[in-house]
Length: 333
Image (cartoon, rainbow, N blue to C red; front, top):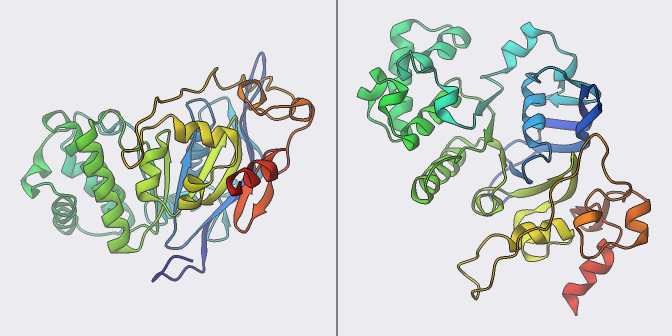
C-alpha cells in the first residue's frame, strides 16, 4: 500500500489476455497470456523493447486493435465491465470518462487542420453534455492547468512546439475527469529537458487528482521516477512484476537486469553501458522454453526446453525465470 493513499478498488484487470495477429505465415502472438491489475490510485509502469507487445496491449484496452489483430482469449475488466465483450455503445461511455489515453506522437494524434482548443472541447461536449461556451471555458482551464496560456486555445498544432503539443494531449486526456490515464510513450521525440518537464507534469497531475495510471514506455528510467510498480514485458509476456524500488534494487530476471544496465545512473559510479545482445524473437515462431534464452547469459538446458512459470520468489515480487531463486540468493552473498 502506498503511504497516505487508500487503494481498494480494482480499476483495470487483465486476465490471461491473448491478442494475436493472423498472417499468411502464422499467428503473431503479440500479447500471450498477460495477467495483472491496476488498483485505484496506483501507478504502474510497463516497460520492454520495441516488438515486445506494449502497443498491442494498449490497443487491446481501447478495443482499437488494427486488422488482422484479434483478442482470442482472456478478459480486460474495467471496474468489472468486460471490455472484450462490450458493445461500441458501452465502450463509448467508458472511454474518456472511465479511462483516457495520452498517445505517442502528438503531431500524429492531433488534427493539423483544427485548432487545438476545439479538439479538446469535442469529448467534453459529447460526454459531459455541456454547452459550447461551458466546454470552451473548461478547455481553457485545462490548458492553464498543464502550463499553456489559454490564448493558445486558438492555435493550430503546427504552431506549437513538441512539448506544448504533448501538454495539449495531456489536457485532452483530463477533459472528462477520468479515473485512469494510459500514458503511451508520452515523451517520444522530446529532448531530455522537455521530456523531464512532461513526466513531472504527469506525476504532479496524478497526485493532485488522485489518478491511476498505466505508463507504457521503452525507457525504464522514466518509470523509476514516476511509477509505484514496474511490469517488465518480453515477447508478449510479463516476466517480472514488483514494487519499482525493489525491482531497481534487486532485479531478478536477466532481461530486467539488462534493461537497467543499459541506462546510465547518475547516482552511481560511472561504468560502461551494456547493450542487450540480439533482438526480440519472431512472435510467429518464438523460441522453445524461455523466450529470452537465446539472448540470456544465464540460460541452461532447462531454459531451452521448458517455459518458466511465474513464481512469487519473495513477497509481492513475481518472476518468470527457472533460475529466479538462485539469482535472488546472489544478492545476499
